[in-house]
Length: 179
Image (tube, rainbow, N blue to C red; front, side, top):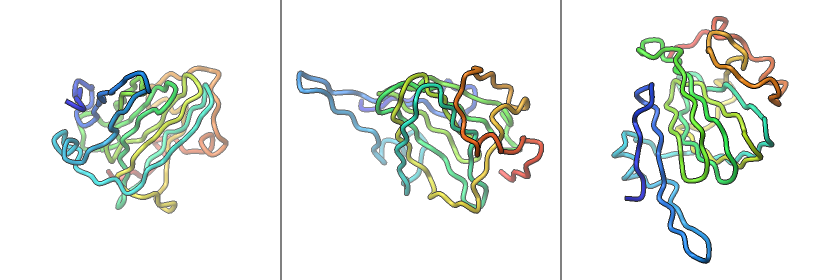
């Protein structure tokens, strides 16, 4: 099988997906996405936007999300490097509201973070991150939660590198989220 999914996450709709690598003396080949297979994992999207990010070691990007009516889910993989990928459930009617997941992602592993979640990652080494989004970026709906919000109950290292934009994000209690 090309992919297998681990649904042992503490939040039901988050999925860890392992890719099968075909390696030989020339290098390797792996599929990142196949619509029919992912539909079987209940990831029923055609991804209209694909992004590539490079981040140096100890960079923390997040917590970002896109508001209704055009929320964004993300399918994230690492091309090169190692990250800890975080998702925070912002769906107010969910049993896991404000719960979070954190998984180490390297090449050959993906994480699916559904719509209605805040998402971000911490690079453990210089990393290239590729992610597919369920909707296109919309600046008017772009939002996020401050990285050190105690309501998220996430301990980050002291030496993270973070953007000025992320330092200015609001705390969860200050946001009007309608997921």
